[in-house]
Amino acid sequence: MAKILRVNMTDRTATYEDVPDKYKLLGGRGLTSTIVYDEVDPACHPLGPNNKLVFAPGLLTGTAAPTSARVSAGAKSPLTGGIKESNAGTEWPQLVARLGLKAIIVEGYPKDDGWWGLHVTKDGTKFFPAGEYVGQSLYSIFPGLFERFGKKAAIATIGIAGEHRMSMAGICYNDNSGRPSRYSGRGGLGAVMGSKHLKFIVVDGEGGPGVPVVNKELFDQGRKKLIEALNTHAITKPKGALNSYGTAVLVNILNEAGGYPTRNFREGRFEGAATTSGEAIFEGNKQRLGKELYNHACSPGCIIQCSNTWHRPDGSEHVSCVEYESTWALGANCGIPNLDDVAELIWHCNDLGIDTIETGGTIAVAMDAGLLPFGDAKGAIRLVQEEIGQATPLGRILGNGATFTGKAFGWPRVPSCKGQNMPAYEPRAVKGIGITYATSPMGADHTSGYTICPEILGVTGKIDQFAMDKADLSRAFQYTTAYMTDTTGHCLFIAFAILDIASGFEGVIDEVNGVLGTDFKVADAANLGKEIMDRELAFNRAAGFTKADDRVPEFMKYEKLPPHNVTWDVPDETLDAVFWA
Ligand code: SF4
Image 1 (cartoon, rainbow, N blue to C red):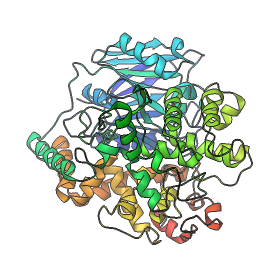
Image 2: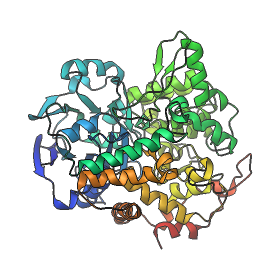
Image 3: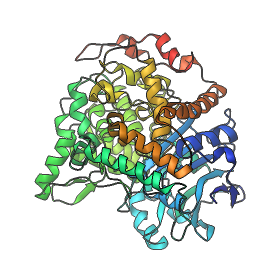
């Protein structure tokens, strides 16, 4: 029978608990947000003793469902001050699920300066001293960790930024090749883990009971439908858009639409888009390697395989993965048009354990405020490596994110919502995603309600990107996402296929019913997501959030964004209609 593992860092105990009935049909974000809602005081300090860090594999994670190796990490966020769920694709949650664990709850507070790791196997748990790894680069320690714990282990950890409790610190997991490159990046959850002096959770799933499937026939029917949809859709099929060009295939598309934020959201088109795009990565690799290189899976069982690797001129590996968000944040948003520079910045972010979106957003704000000129790649690398990496006084300012940095520099142009920097879609040029940024309980987060599907990509049918009346659209995307991907454990990128191909959507519901023995219908998906989001919204309101927090920054209302020369003109009433009606 599945268990919850409760880890107390005050007395360093780890105990197995039965799963309460009310959690049995939950997984991923549904479970992390419910546990945070149930157990964390919304008024607590995110880095104090009363916050808890919860990890949960998705409902389908650990089964044979395709593209379902996702982990949700949840807590009160030090970046936003509200509830946070941040998910990542990695083998780690598959092993957690195969050990029969629904969730791992980390609570308590260290009594001294010691740092600890936790090793979880089928035989139980063991704490180990981790002081020797503190202050070290993640790339340098990962090979030794796999030697110590075995190649079949999977690692969740924090880097130097998390040790220093910086709000841009993520939780890092290994990818399929053992690189420290998969992230619960957003919201500073690495700082929460650091506040508890927990450096690692190493998991070995060997010999675990696995994830029970109540109705195997139904489950298999569902996964076949989903596989068929993923293998057919132009975006998700083998050698399709994601497998060829990675998520960075979006660079040229958003640039063309005039919605590609450039130089701290001063423009909507970047003259260096073509040289930092997914197509440029594909062609650059081909030139440097002398052959075409298609992308790989970040985690076992992914059939979309969108994860790329960038190579140096001599053909050696530089970094994996150059995601759309990363090439944008550290490229266009900082005015840097060179892929080798972008790759170097991503490498340093991975090495320190920081979110590439918040890092790029922060450097862009600092550039805008006069610390460096836009386009100064060497200066940007120095800020990351030497200032953040050595936790200097300037590094500690930058390491706490774009909003904090904007305050430190007295700078009003900070493109964030609820303290979290916006991702790579300009809200003035794509109104629906702006509504999601403003209203999501997670802060500015594209993944929480990806209206880019209809607004830019035409998935589910094209909707005018400039149309403003999108409260219903954003809410529907937010509810559906909260369940269909974030709770099931499927990667968000199945959305393209399941939104366009009805049998793919049904397939996910069949998979869930097969695993749980439930009888959910396609029409239930949004309501299941609503139940989860109602708890998140209630947590945030108890933490002090009001309608005034569901807004985009003021400068977007009076600054016209080229090339379309548009401002943020969505009425506040539309924003309030999303979750305050
Ligand atoms: S689609 Fe990409 S990000 Fe999602 S699980 Fe597969 S490789 Fe990872």
